[in-house]
Image (cartoon, rainbow, N blue to C red):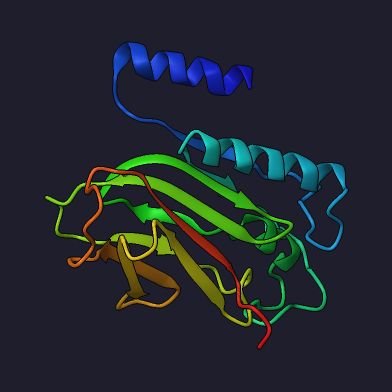
Length: 185
């Protein structure tokens, strides 16, 4: 946390934003099939910390230097699919309001975004929904119920969330969006 705290202090002092880049690039990649490996635990911690700070990130991947056997659906021979699953997480790509928190639980695949909607913004809140995490679909809940509406965006793997015009609650209140794997019917 010391590095994250130092970055927070610097951006507060000088202004602007930040993005974590140039991490990764080691032979010991995280592996979704081995959640207790040191590399997987480290990657999960880093990504969770980024989420908790609403920090963007970019991983330096050297997978093209190695041959990985048994590609998963959506992966090609040579892709490090076990690492892809660790790093493929839902996240808010655009927020029509003030973000409060964002969290992803890799064990349950539950994603939560809390925000204070800004009704003067006409663009939707957009959330990336990775198919690796939700291969059989997903369910969305919004609290308070009916405060917002969601639909698939015009592009794949994303949902668009907009204020419900008939909601009579406090427009400035916190809204929480949750995405979970589709329930068995």
